[in-house]
Image 1 (cartoon, one colour):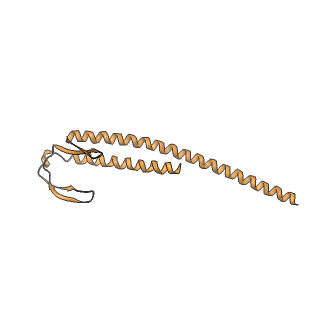
Image 2 (cartoon, rainbow, N blue to C red):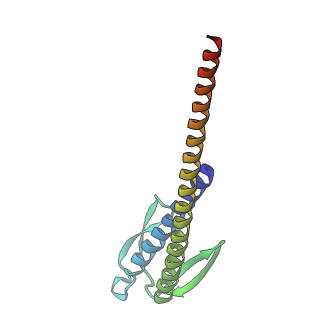
Image 3 (cartoon, rainbow, N blue to C red):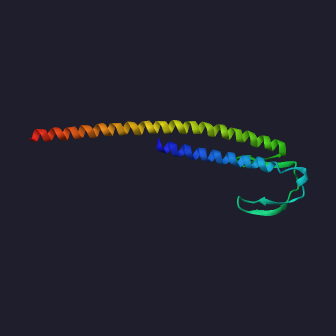
Length: 137
C-alpha cells in the first residue's frame, strides 16, 4: 500500500505539472496578437536557454501533439487544443486523488488492525508470563 501511495503521488504530481505547462501555453498563446508581429522576443531553445528573435507570424503555431508529432494550427485552435488537454489532465488528476484517498484509508485501516493485533499479542504474552510466575511459586 505504501508503494502504491508513492506511485499514485508521483502520477498526481506529473499530471499537475503537465496541467500547469498547458495552462502556461494558453497564456503564451494570448500574446500572439497581430500587434506583436515583428516585435523582438526571446525564443526558448530549452527550458533554460533563450535566444533573441522576432515574432514573425502571429496567426499560426506549431503544436506538439505528443509522441513526436507536431501539427500547425491557428492560435484559436491551439487554445482549444490546450484547453481540452488541460481538462483531460484535471479530470485524470481528480481520479488519481480519489484513488490516493482510498489507498490512504486502506493503509490507515491496515495499520490500526496491525496495532490492535500487536497489542492483543503483547497482552497475551504478558498474561502467559504472569501465569508461569505464579505456577513457579
